[in-house]
Image (cartoon, rainbow, N blue to C red; front, side, top):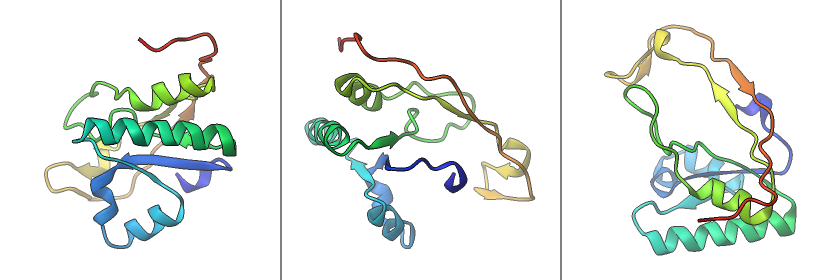
Length: 133
């Protein structure tokens, strides 16, 4: 991900990741937006603050809309990032990552040999004129 990281970009992730040693320092130093997925009011407040900061500072936001990894297939998308994009009137730029199944053991949670993940950046999806339900 670091190779394709855009300028002026922050990432949004679940609050519990801020307690992983080492990772937490990098996340905090890169102005990560942590969302409390178990407290709806706090999550909404965080999303509003993120939208305001994005507008004022001209930031980009990197999210993984499924919210977590799936054992198999895809999970439903979380709405937060889409709400921010619509509030700010900024396009959504989908990035698709290929599967790492051939070289990652989900049961044992480790990479058992080398492999390649392909990241594909798709065309922007405009949000101007789109309203929240």
